[in-house]
Amino acid sequence: MSDPMTELFTVALGLSSPWRVKAVRFEQAAQQIHFDVVCEAARLSCPRCAAPDQPIHDRLQRDWQHLHFFQYRALIHAELPRVRCGVCGERGDTEVQQVPAPWARERSGFTLLFEAMVVTLAGMSRMPMRRIAKLLGVSDQRLWRSLGALVDAAYAKADMSGVEAVGIDEKHVGRDRVITVVHDASAATRGRVLHVSEGCKAQNVGLFAEALKAHGGDPEAIERCSMDMAKGYIAGVQQHLPKALPCFDPFHLVKLANEALDSVRRAEVAQEPALKRTRYHWLKDASDWSRAEVNLHWLRHSGLKTARAWRLKERLRDILAWRRLPQVPVLLLMDGWIRWARRCRLPAFQRLGKTFQAHLEGIRNMLTHANSNAIAESINADIQSAIARARGFRTARNLKTIIYLLKGGLDLPGSPFARAVA
Image (cartoon, rainbow, N blue to C red; front, top):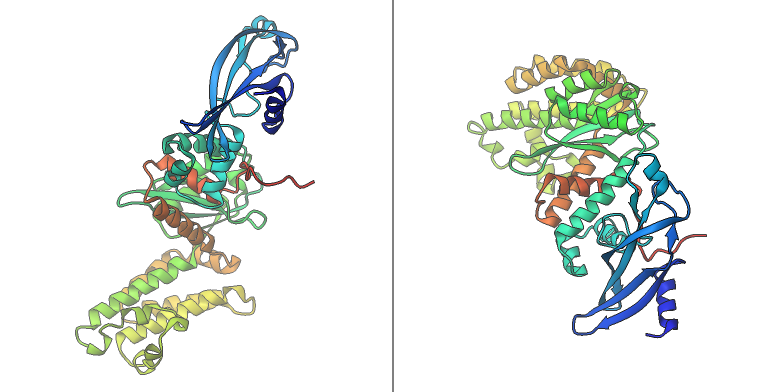
């Protein structure tokens, strides 16, 4: 092609001296367009120590896939120079250093703009990687490697120095796979995922503490930790986050009360036919009742054990809802509820009352600071949606990559089509 054409593509690819497009080749049968790029310099600065005017040792042929040119696959080819640096040799380092390509990340087979497109499709549009690979004409394994490297690099730069409150929750991602997700509950940076690890034991909290130190945070600066009553998490917080106040999530408290209520109903339904097909009526919020369920007030206010259990559960929900009202003595009300549960002559709620009594400190901390793990439930919902869209993930690494991409708040490349704001 003519010189004006190569000059046009040199500018379009964002190249500057000594780099330029030497030739453009179009292969209609293969539906591809090729850009041959050359570095015209005879001497370059060392990419390692920045020593100027070093001789070029040799050039290595490399190829990269770029964004499509119209409907055609675009490929960039270049012989990347390697510099022989005398300064590095005098220091005892390797003399020959590879000069990086200005249009691509090191050791990547894609250009920066191509990788930005992958991040945009996977993050903004939340397309499954298999569909993105089919759209762009590459294998999903290559895209996973590229996306994983980008996310790892961005996560390595994440700043956790201001983290003062966290939430810990487990997420089941298969029949026998569980991950622990730690999110930021600090007021300024609430909602981002800080750490993901396989398992749900005390050592998972230890792994988070190590990651927190590596990113400028201090485990002893964590003031509150919202979680459920899992023994592993409790032990892990006591060991690795020594100054954090455990705050048990109200969602899990209500879940335990619902399980106790359903246990009472199942034990009584054989003797009380009126309780048949009413399971979800007792578990649902009153705002979700149908018209027929609203008319069951006679059943709710009866002397049945299930009705008594339902009133216990609803009272617990009221106390937890009042924790944000400073004029309500929720601590005294919770103490009264535990006493009521322990003497209610309903074995399931008597056991629940003992459980609450044994974990009273964490419940009191939650009521005092009005904490909850609602953010964790939202994160878990997004994780489940990603798993459903992708029909599962081959490896735990791929799952972690998607979690950090969607919920990590990382500094990743933006859309290649977004205009810079002056």
